[in-house]
Amino acid sequence: MKNPYKNIPLPIWMLCLVSLISKSGISVLAFFPLYLTETLHLDLRTIGHIFSFGGLGFIIGAYLGGYLSDKFGSLTVQAGSMIAEGGSFLLLGYFHSPWVLLLLIFLIGLSNAASKSSGYSNLAAYSKQNSYACSYALNTQAISLGAIIGLAISGTLAIANYSWLFVMNGVGNLIACAMLITFFHHRAPSKIELEVKQKMIFPWSNRHFLMLMLMVTVMGICITLDDALTLYLKQIEHISQSKIGIIFELQLVLSILLQLPITNYFKRFNELHMVGFGIMLVALGYFILPLCSGFYYAGFCTILITFGEMGAIPLLYTYVTKIAPEKNKGSYIGLTNCALISIPLIVSPTLSMFIYTKFNPDTLWFGTSLLGVMICLGLLIFQRYSYVNSTIS
Image (cartoon, rainbow, N blue to C red; front, top):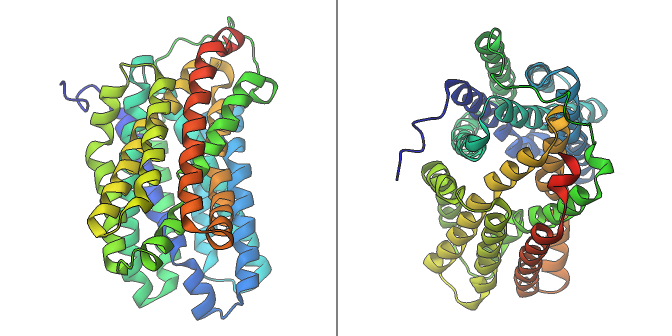
């Protein structure tokens, strides 16, 4: 097998480095509830309202970032989003009013999601069509590495002073923005523009694409069950917190080491078929989870789920990038981010915990498996009978 890293161009490496720095910073939000309770002494209801507005900003920003990328250029939007996010984090440590915190968290969610969508648009702009998958895979590796680095640094800084967490992320975003502007100032994408030949069809008016996004939203909910999974491993499997941490760290390490080689192999097949195969692995992992017990068995199930995610997500973005019109590719990518990441990030924790507590954990795992099988079949039917390619090209 050829070295998958060999032919990735320098601009893609730079964009992935920016993603790494950005993800390292946003990881501080894992400690934000502790800051609100231990330092500001806010009640849980107020904290819930603050994070709800952050989630709303994340949903709006995901599509807005892609839409604005089509209007003003993805580099401009990504740089502006990073400045807004960095500035909001720097201000976060100076205000203690719940209303101001609510506004700042909304802006952080909005700008972070917009930066992510415009970043994916940049990856598409600076990649060749046959290397979309590898570019997205490398970016996923960068995000996973950034999560590990960010959590490690944030944990250390939180012990000293929570304010340093906000300073670290604010300054980090501004540095990454400066790198982005400096590197790409005179580097336009070397692509032939097809705007004259292609008509503009917005994703909201493309019913075939909206049907796909409905399936992607359900898929996103199925792969965003970390809260329920953590609770299950602790309460039902009686696995210690340190060992649960090892399991989730292993997921990140596998993504860092194997994401690009796996994607490089899978990209030779039909993209939607591989997305369906990936979600089937996720469904299998959740289906066998309650059938046995133990640390190593739970680790095996989560590894299976991780491999499914690694196989599915970059190929999904590749498919969307290929079928989207050149003139409004950012809008399609932004809506995909909204469906796969933003909406599940808000819906999945509440829905999964409701099923977990109202019924039982097995209902959640078997139900998720059934949804995974239905999504896989839905994608196969969609691939066979949909006319997306002819509709939007």
